[in-house]
Length: 258
Image (cartoon, rainbow, N blue to C red; front, side, top):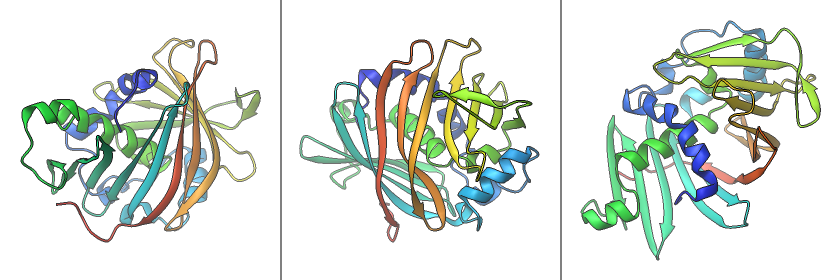
């Protein structure tokens, strides 16, 4: 997907997740990331709802996604993940061409129409470079791995003492911070009080009016994992609508790009 201006805030915010990739954390198999049991009771409950069989560690899938900004401009793209090896690929189309940026066997790779020989001009135009890979890998690897990604060693999760509000309703809330080397944002995850499904989440940069919040709707079950289907983004400061991400469908990942 070629990021648009309305998603610029998201790109900056999720830069910390991209740093995880460059430090080698996210490019490792997910089996290494889930060795410790979460301390927060709410995290245990939401994990039990979204991934009851513990399949995240061995997930191999291709996700078909759509992002629509506030002006109605839509971008469709695909994400490929093999959590047993750390393989990741972002697949998009533009100007009649297919662009792929990803990581396999701990090394980054880039393809344009299936070829690794790419001119400097096309690498820049289609963001087939480490900066472009860092963003999509951190952003989508984190978002579509929630709440399982909250078990990463860098995440510090605790239960809020009281229910907190989002979208006009109050929910049991999970508070998450990260090691300073990873990111300084404050995260709030809102859970259904009956089954502990994720209902939304919010982040800020230390000030309540900064950052954004995301409301979730519907689910797609992928190898036993319940992944939110619709994510609507808003600014914290004025509830301005930014855009919507939709998980259109998922299918098994049977072949890797490289």
